[in-house]
Length: 162
Figure (tube, helix red, strand yellow):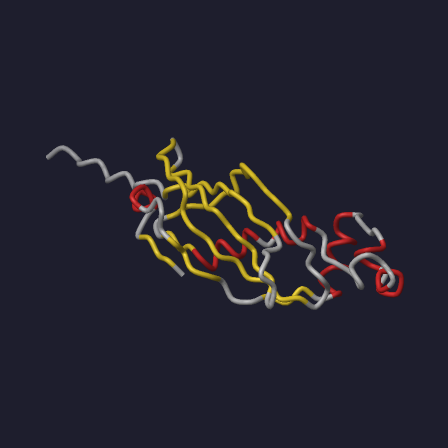
């Protein structure tokens, strides 16, 4: 976890390595839940018997399931104080490089690639690489953008005339 006192501190952090998250197991229950939530119930994700004879030798996680983990992974890597809210602002580039088999463990590695002051706070680019335990090739690489909205400054009470 890399901590910053406030969003403005991110402006000088371009190039900072954020380290790695904890490992997270991607089990069939999680895959089935994602399939139910999104309506993507293709057999390569939810039918272990059919998938065993398929191209991956078993079920695999949805690419978008792996992608959806970037928000909680970012929260494990980056702590910013004096923030009213953090908003997933978008993605500039995403590449799915390898399937994530059911039962695999994932973690993310991140680095800050850009930081820009904007009206609400600071917009930060973070390159995230999602690694698969025991594999040399990552599951995905994504250039994410997070907006850290600064807490509003309290207005001092007006002085009463004497």
